[in-house]
Structures are given as structure tokens and as C-alpha cells.
Amino acid sequence: MSAYTFDTGALMALERRRQRMLGFLKIARLHEIPIVVPSVCIAEWWRGRTDVREKIIAAVIVEHTDDVLVRLTGEALALVPSATCIDAIVMATAARRGGIVFTSDVDDMLRLQAAFPSVRVMSV
Image (cartoon, rainbow, N blue to C red):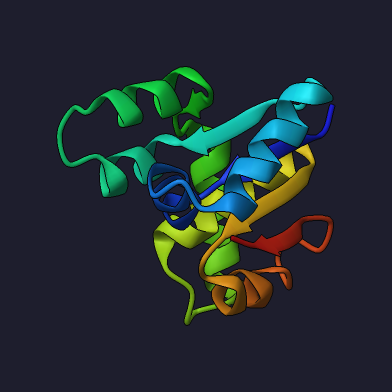
């Protein structure tokens, strides 16, 4: 099943109620598309509890790293040494589920397509 994968920038855009991201969220709900957020993105984004943050967390599936995911991430970093670990985790997460990454770091994610060619990248 295809899924939407949100990175930290996508979470921030949702929190700021950016219309583009709210539209993607609406499409996901309408078509029952799972929204996945790697747990490291939650750690990078979370700066304390707010009602808005709680609603965002309730609307997504938080995916934790496992042995397979971290190995895929490491292989991607070997292929694209300029990539960050968190960006590689986001792309590896998306590659496992299929679908699209929503990000504010389009250029960084596009470089990682060398390791994950099936993942589509969308700007928030």
C-alpha cells in the first residue's frame, strides 16, 4: 500500500497551517492514504505539547527505526555521502512503504533518490 511520508519540514508546515500541506492531509484522509512520520522527525520537530501538535500526532503513524531501516539508511549514506542521517531515514521509510515524501528539503531528498529511485518527492 502506498503511503505519504512526512519529514520535519512537513510537520512544521502542518503546524503553521500552510494551505498546501493541509490540502495534502485532506487528500490523504479522503483516499485513506496512511501518513507515516519517522520517529526521528518527531524528535526534531517536537518542542513541547500544544493542542495543534497533539492533533498532528494523532493524524499520523509514527514509525520507529528497526534493524532493516537503519541498514537501508546506512547504505544510502554510503551512496550519497553528503546526505544527512535523518533525510536518509525519511527516504528509507518511504521506500519501504512506497509513495511520496513531503519535505521542505527537496534538493536533499532528490539527491537521495539515487539510493531510493521509487520514492517521489514533493515540496511542502
